[in-house]
Image 1 (cartoon, one colour):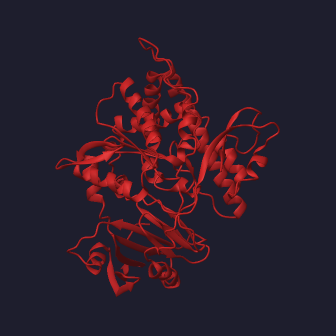
Image 2 (cartoon, helix red, strand yellow):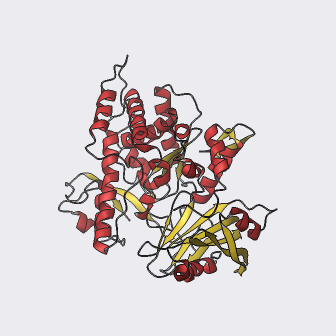
Image 3 (cartoon, one colour):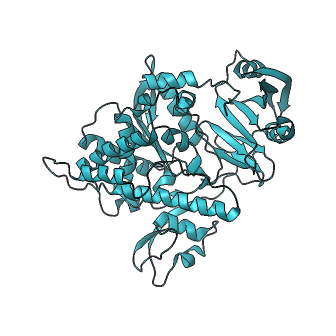
Length: 473
C-alpha cells in the first residue's frame, strides 16, 4: 500500500546513485579524514548519528584492515572504500553507493573467524564493484530507492527483531541474480587473498539459523513468522548455484597461491568482551518505545510491536491490520509543520490541528485519497518526524494512532540513565558442560538458544570438552 506522504528523500537518493556530482565534504571514517561528495557525506553522517559507531578502536581497525586487504589483493582501487563498524545489535552488514561498507557489531557475535568476516566484506564489496546500486534503478525500485540514503533508525528493539530491519530494504532490493553476482565477485576476492572461500557458506548457515529460530519463536507464540531479509537472505544453505560459484572461485588459476592471512585466534582476541545484543540503554514501561540515540519515546497500545526499517520506525498492531510509521527528515526553517504536512501529503487534507506537547510543536491531520484515509502528523524534535497511521478503517483505528502521536516526547533524565550491557567472552568447555548448564547463570531471555545460535549449534547438539565456545555475561 502506497504512502500518502510524498517521498521527500527520493531526490537525494537519486543524486547519491547518480554519482553525487557537486560540492565535496570531509568526514572522519575510522579515524581517517575522507573527502567525498557533500550528499554522500550527509548520508554517512546520518547513519553514524542515528546508529552510532561502536566504541572499540582496535576492533574497528581490525575490520577495516581485513577489508583493505581484500581490496589490495584483488587490485581494487576505485571507488575509495571505507569500512565502518556500527554499534547496532542487528545481525547484518550493508553497502552504500560510493564505496561505503557498514558492519554491525551484532553480526560479529555470530561469526567464528576472520575468514567469515572477510566473506561478509567481500560480498558487500562485490555489490559495489558490480555496480548494483545503479543497476537497481528500475521503475519497480524507484519507490524504494530512498532506502539507500536511509535515515537508519535502530533504537531499543529486540536483537532478534533486527533481522527485518534496514537490511530488508537494502539487501532484498538487489534481487537473486545480483546477490549471486556479489557472491561470485566476493568469492574471487577471498580466493585471491588466501581465505577459505567456503566461509561464505558458513555465514549463510549462521543467518539461516536465525531465520529458523525466529520461525520457532513465532510458532510458539501463535504469531505469523516473518522471513529473514538480511545479508545473503535469498540463499538456501544447499543452493546449487552458489556452490557452483564457490567451486569456480576455488579453481581460479593464480600465478602464486597466497597464504591465508588469518592469524589463528586473532578473531577471538579482537571480539573478546564485545557488547552482545542491545547496548546499555534506558529501561522503562512494557508498552513504550525508547530511542536513546535520537532522544525520543512514545507509548503504544498493548500488544503492538515496534520495529525499525531503514528509514522508519514501524508500530504494528497484534493482528497486523493497523500500522503507524514514523519517518525522519531535516527541518526546513522556512516551512512550519503545517506547511510541511500539507505539501507532503497526497490527497485532500482535513481536520488539521496544532500539536503542543512536552515542549514540542507539530501538526496533525487526516489525508484522504479516494476511499482511503490515513492519520498524518509532523512533529519537530531536532529532526522533523513524520507520522502516518494506516488501517482498513481509520475511524476504528485512529484512537490507537493518536495514542502514539500524542505521547511522542523527549526522554527524561531518568530514562537516559545507562544500564549494563551483556558482553561476549570465550571459554574452553569444561568437562560435562552443556549449553543448558552454561546458560543457567545468564539472565537473558531464552539464554540456552542464544548460546546455541552464537556457537552454531542451533537447534541441537552439545559442545565438546576443551573446545573454544562463546558465552554471554
